[in-house]
Length: 134
Picture 1 (spheres, helix red, strand yellow):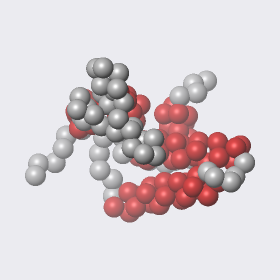
Picture 2 (picture 1 turned 90 degrees about the vertical axis):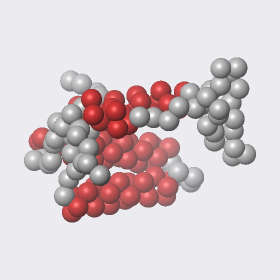
Picture 3 (picture 1 turned 90 degrees about the horizontal axis):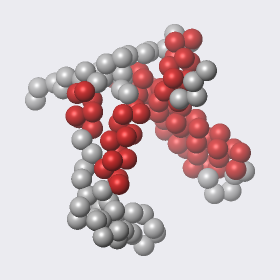
Picture 4 (picture 1 turned 180 degrees about the vertical axis):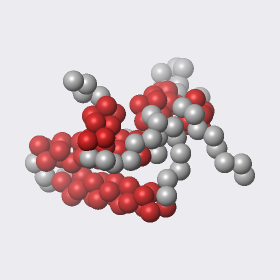
């Protein structure tokens, strides 16, 4: 059995009769709102336990966020693994060719001069998405 989050969430959606799309597409405003509420609920649970909660509960809540995020991507027909790969490619360009890293005071890695923004639209187009004309 696959342990890929995308495969596991697809199995869940299929077993429970939830939306599954294979091509990126907009969904109804009601479904989009519902998915947003689910994500917000899970993110709030992470925030609740992130400082003082036990580590096993934090791990559980983090996994729930990922599970619901993958489900939301599946509902929209988005191959989230490919999008994550593009975000990773972009994030790695924050490292300058000289190996220097720009950081904010709190430690967040910042975009340097050699940063390349992700092209998520290109990833979605490769997945069959046809953006609406403006």
